[in-house]
Amino acid sequence: MAIESDVLVVGGGLAGVTSALAAAREGAKVRLVTYKQSSLRQASGLVDLLGYVDGEAVVDPYGAMADLHEDHPYRLVGADTVRDGMALFDGAVDGYYGDHTDTNALLPTHGGTVKPTARYPAGAAAGIATDDRATLLVGFETLADFDAPLAADHLAAAGAPFSADGITIAFPGDLRADAKVTRYAKLLDQDSDVAVDGRKVGARTALADRVKDHLGGHERVGFPAVLGDDHAAAVRATLEDELGAAVFEVPMGPPSLPGLRLEDRLFEALDAAGANFEAGNPVVGFEGEDHIEHVVVDRNGATVPYSADQYVLATGGLVSKGVESDRSGVTEPVFDCHVPHPEDRYDWFEDGVFDDHAFARFGVDVGPDLRPRDASGTVEYDNLRAAGATLGGYDFPAEKSGSGVSIATGYAAGEQAVEDLS
Image (cartoon, rainbow, N blue to C red):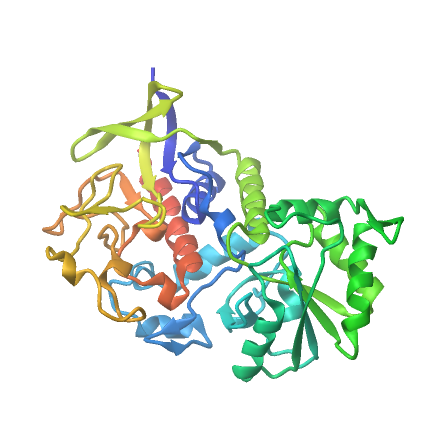
């Protein structure tokens, strides 16, 4: 017997969760299935909408969407739908800033660059690059991913409107060089006692004490994004009180605690909306030709049919293997949807690292209804939509548009799926 729902979402990243949340909030019976852990834990926790168009920085993402080509996902769903999707995000996830304006915020990254973004967690708010307060960046000897002095030098070279200095200190607690970021967070979350000069001191106070001698006249202090998980706000508050300066987290690469925090909040919202979700169970097949009757899910070696009236494909792109490539071509592995690409593999890329590579835009071809289309432009399945990085026609790393496209198209796919319920 098949496990039934109104809307079945395949994929547990930002697009999939947004799609499931949009449909569930409309009263649909929703189930989300994903094989892998959410890609959110690999993300910075920032929510980018549109940072660049043709290499030029964007101030107002919504205003710049008219400059995108007509097959770009933003043009397909329309700017009003993008706004509605972002409103869904704002309502579902607390502790994020940026919804007060259409203008991008500029935040420093762990590499010392400045990144335009539309939404950012509260923990990063004091680090906004347009703030002219003198800044001290703090790195840890056992955390090689953040070279604070180098990042400060890069910010100065980039013309940041504030003075920045960087130091590297030993994190209290004598963590090993291979310690996970969650280990740093746990010590600070629990304010565990650590040994300092033969006495026991809470980890938060011990960390502040190691920074104080370097504080000088700096009015704010940026740490790598490991300042707690469940009690991150309390960790920052303690450090601010001890240091007498504003404290912020610098977004980091994977694995990312801000990404994990965002994942938790989104799945909590999904649970509150009444949706079902399960991870670790891949979709290994389906039945149907022009209309999907059901998908087949591998549950610990047993194949189980899952049926729904409407389906959403949100398995990601090349990085997440929602789109796959080999010497014979580029494919979408779940429903075998058409992925436009040059036949000659040498046309997939250009010579320069930062050139306009065709592979960066690989994904399924859809129209405004987000239904995948074959090579002739005909809809492949009347009850399937695609969203997020599974879509082709845009270069999200260059545009800094990945999160925004996932939210906007995920929202649109979920809403349209509910509208089409029989």
